[in-house]
Length: 227
Image (tube, rainbow, N blue to C red):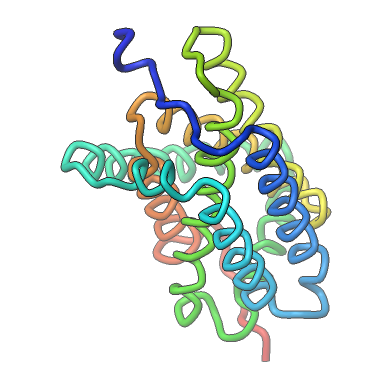
């Protein structure tokens, strides 16, 4: 990777403000997931996403707007990445279930949560907002804070690893090992995409495409919607 391709422009906001925004966003999403048994997960996560995204643009707006500038290459890479991730998910899922028989029940529980009113298809606009917010927080603001003014190899690795680990923290509120594992693996992929493309367009489209193919169009497990 060339030096010019490695570098991300330094964030305009002080690092402490960026970390504070990430911490606040983590708390919002953790609370949303922790209350999913009492409130529709779409209502709670939608509200958390809207508040978190507002906070992120308040502290890091210019940098985020720059990262969302669209180029054809970023769009193609993002869509292709989502398709590849979905294919791998469907190919590896039966193997993983054979090794971990309890996994299927946990995955069905995840789909049952997503079937909460108004239903997954009707909630697609909320899904888009949640995906964009997550990319703004963990692949945008957080990676800006870690990268800072430097672009050395160690700092780049630290940005990918740290953003992925912190991305898993709100999943503790869900109590779901499946969500925790998904967040860790997917977070590593999407953080690497942001670093390579120097854009949030690529990981956002990969994230959204994967969600649509795995959770909406071709679910791994079938569950009956709540009555």
